[in-house]
Length: 265
Image (cartoon, rainbow, N blue to C red; front, side, top):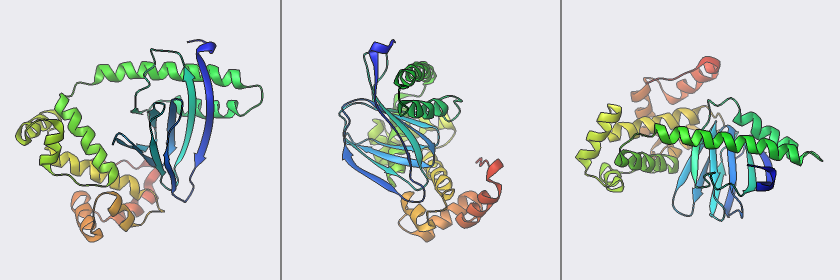
């Protein structure tokens, strides 16, 4: 990739502090990458896909695809719009978990800073070249690592979408989306994860609840609704049964021990 093949169209930074930001339906004429460095957001696309992005998530949005974005309180992110003639770079809609990558957050911030400095556009472009090269390398590694049965991959995608939307789905609906029978899908899940489909759903729902509890701007009722529970008392009972601690006490414990807090089920 050389300079003539790459142009930064825009670069920005957003910090929602203690308020929720909602962006209405819109589209970009160029590809965009968004990297969440703190908090979480949700992006709905007109093709029906929904992405729930937390710290370390990088979302690649192709050009001219309408979407709307919700940044929850205390969400901080960087974004870059760019044009590239590099046909080897995958511009399809996808999300990468880069929370363990030591470079992406630093590069996104530096590109933003350089882009907004006078006479530093060339440096910003050069650093974006490096970032895109790294994303191509990570894409290849992820493709090699993907070994799930196609039905498991489809089911997980569907499950992640309903968790993000705060919806519920039956075992039959998940199996139908995956294109296999209920019994076969459960067999595949137990072989892959040693858990049933609905156990994975519960695990992911509780994982999201724990993440949201770390945001002290959200009430327990808000969190219950975001996790797909219409009854906050039922949510509290399920959370207590799963974690052996109430949501409020979990939040207090996290607040006092967050520097070395790791939940494992």
